[in-house]
Length: 232
Image (cartoon, rainbow, N blue to C red; front, side):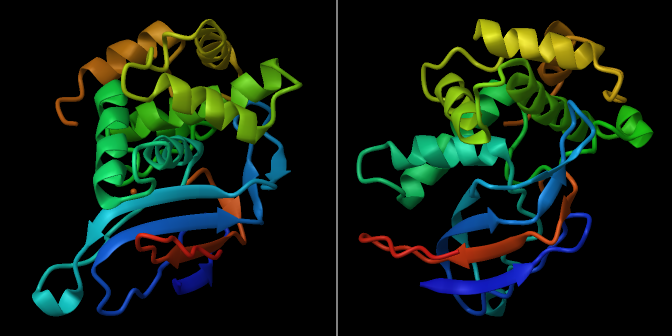
């Protein structure tokens, strides 16, 4: 059951009204286009990217529901890992998967808003926003370096690295190579020049807000119960 849907602005910002709903939420982003960090090109989004939140609380209780929720290849990886858990996409599995990704990366992939790695402003962004930008650039570079790989395939690779017991984003040779290559890419304006530098950066994050700039992307929030019925 879809709770709400909207079309983002040209920067990828969006707002959804979830009313008095409380519980887990799945966000889906489809269509539109985004700026590919590795090439600098505008690329059509042909895959569905998702982001999941274990629990939202209605405003009427005095607590704001969702202030910010990013939808990126990394949140998609977390959703894939949550879905693979016993029972599928449950609130417990969502929280566990998001926490594991956060443990690997040092920042919350859902609540953190990544900087634009191709913008000079990314060099002075917060540590988490900058690290997120470089990681998304690494995803982009991974696809550029491996032409047979699609965005869907790349998110599968990153999901495997970011699952429980996974090697982390620097434990896969191809991911590491992509991180190093993006570090040297002229489009990278973050000042983070290698995968080792990214690891150093994320190590400074003490704790376990949308995707790269996009154009007219449709975002929907879907409610799911024991038998999910999800629409975009």
